[in-house]
Length: 159
Image (cartoon, rainbow, N blue to C red; front, side, top):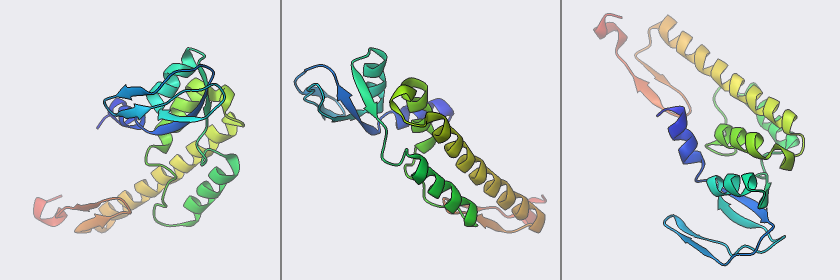
């Protein structure tokens, strides 16, 4: 899967918005959303939230986990553990990127959040590199991580 496909999947995640317009329930293939009333939060897919935000029809409410203190805890926990730790959302990177690119004015401490998510991502990449290096160096028959198991017979393939 390439980056655009992952971003497409992330855009289906529900986020809260505060609309500044009125509209009855909208019936979509993926499910019904609404009704929309000014000042009352409503859950919508991220793609719709971004579209409404670009047209100045709403304010996006950042997800609960998109908070400096919570992200610091996640980053610190990731640094302490040897294996991957659970992330607040499977698409946390894509959600952060889209929300900060299109609604940074709705997210308190947006720059700090961007840095914390990047630090967490860098820590996870470093763990993956160390695991791969160890795997190659020790010529293991299989490698295991928190997300997947890869089985390769290095010796029978002459690698």
